[in-house]
Image 1: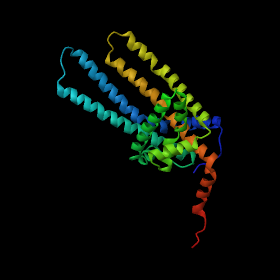
Image 2: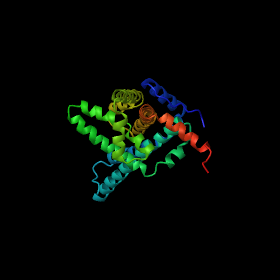
Image 3: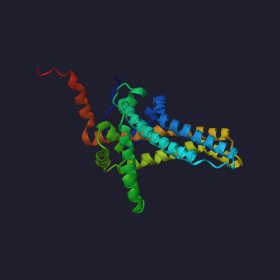
Image 4: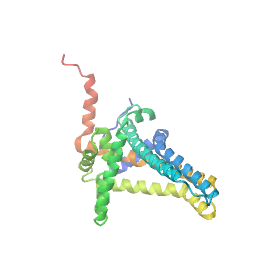
Length: 272
């Protein structure tokens, strides 16, 4: 087991450790987050192929059975994508936890621990989306505050094995007094997402606009660029918020001392 550095961190230290974990374990995090976006990439390529075929066969009216199959397939793939996205977020949290606490980890090990917890992640994202949406109706600022206060709900749920509503309440408890730091993390993730999208996706967007009839190959390249940008940026926010979860527990609950005592318990002589 590697050396564990459990101590209160400043926001700068949280961000620094985020990028250190990301760089030193890039292929682990990229492999975890690639699963849902690979499914989305396949869906987009399939839709592009259908669109190309439809244009080639212009004038033909699709049958009701074909329409029903397309709608059913879209719903099925949409649900699959949501499940895989929840599983990828949960697996990323487990990977960060193992690395932060000095435990050995791997892509398969992280996904083994997910199971039905992926559904819980989806419920948390839906509930927090509703909460933030209601807050945004109250002149935007309350919505931003609620977004920051619920930011560590997924790490809390996965690492404490708590239900959806309890994990949101737990996030509210931990982030009290630290909304500003959480907002900076959100802002950083947004800026990185925008920059990577400009580098990888915008050139192909201009290319498709310049063509009167977009070819299937151009669409493939466009969706491939989107897949690459999503894989590059996707893990960063989850890594940062997972580290922030531990940082808040160290600051407010002395988690570093709890972890030290727990690690010493197995080596203590038994009362028997």
